Image (cartoon, rainbow, N blue to C red; front, side):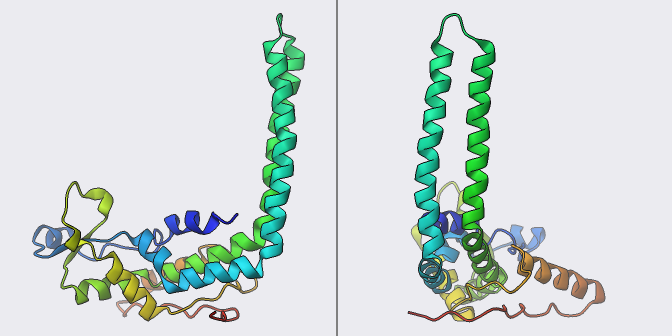
Length: 228
């Protein structure tokens, strides 16, 4: 469970980032840079502090999931060993082998469902943190590009070779920290993962259709975190 924040960070920023320059402009770009947005999100103060707060606030659930996970894994190992024993028999008893395989499958599915129920509050809090950062990512990117005088930003995975000085990931981190010093770890009632990003996308789409300027990112609801 303690690795959940690292895994979550890898998914950050994927939802809200949209192309900032059109294709013709990209072909004429004079200043090009790269930035790893997932790393930038994970390095932000908001994500770092929220991760620490979640570890403290949901310690009981995190510890319970880790302990229960170890127990369930041990039980699953016993069933796997029984299946392996059946598989080694000559001749094989197909009915017994299929029953052993089903027992392993059923146990694995039940264990997964149980652990997901235990971690549900933690997962929702992490999703809410991600969501709040994601809705401000485009603003951070644009501000970093302006500060570094960059007119084309590329994902590092799309680059074959580059010099270190073209990486502006740290500049994106700095802009995220300015725009979003902290976030709440308490999702509002009825919150669903990705809800803030979806609301932002819907608002931007409506604004584009009406010809109005896109609205600012909605202020997250829920209790504000206590910065340690």
